Length: 320
Image (cartoon, rainbow, N blue to C red; front, side, top):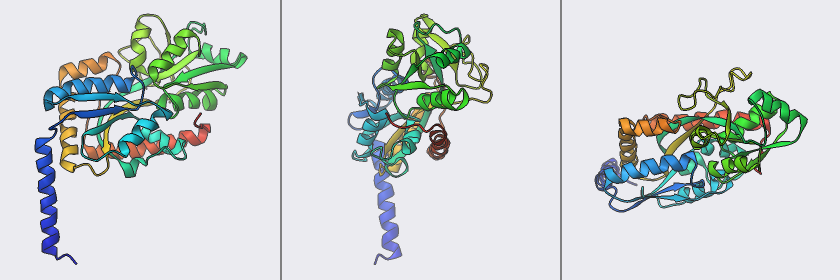
């Protein structure tokens, strides 16, 4: 049996080692795993972070896209990685959704992942390709009542997917089939080519296509219109009062990562979010910086899990 003195000494040694690791971290390249295809909002923010943090850390930060199963493939890989701080997950609110949506996503969010930093948040957006010929969201819903239409999302379990399921099936009571893609970029391309009539994604990936008039914005899911697309009405303005959903992007580490390293990453991300140029780049693609402590982010992830579990139950959403 350990004496109190030995236990205390052991705790002090562990704290000292953790502090030393933080002081030298990183001393080799860091890998940012993005569990979606390139071009989507998670990928965009991961690349902004990697560029800025590589300058701060004086080390290469490599973005590694690992799409599949609504983000579960890449997320599970990180959850099973050595908890040394050199394999970092950049993921969205899908980590809070998939815990309920999938019987076995390949990881347990609360057990296997440490919530480190809440980077940014954006409304979701529903867009339409030219093949739909809808003037607005109400018009699109009326068209859906007269024929079988489909919509694409960045993948099963993303908040744009669940937002659309709740809007179409629960509120509007129309049957619009879901087509999951491996990222927002492919989903938007599906709308461009007519493979799907709608796409629902986090707003940033759609902004360039909407500004170029290649797609039509039907509605954003925020409480107010977004400054990046002021002409696109909200879902609430379109006749569904109280509708409000967001996609957030956060930083996670495998559980067991040194506490001081996690705190360092949180502090370095927080510092970036205070920089005017970083905030401008986020707002330019429709995201707002969030930030905050590790503790507040951990509590937020738990609250999101509860919220989206309710939506999964009410919509009957299933993995495709």
